[in-house]
Length: 74
Image (cartoon, rainbow, N blue to C red):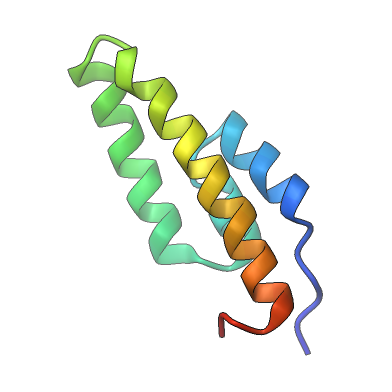
């Protein structure tokens, strides 16, 4: 049995390091995506789009944790 994910913790982890909240949720492929895309956007946009990645990663980690707790995600 899998323990429940805390959506707030998942969001904070991904806000600090995009992909960390996905690792916490057990979404390893999504985490790899964020680990690769975020630095690329930070460097490629001079930092402008890097913040967008942090926010979107936190948002998705939060909602995936909620869905996982509800049993909507395997």
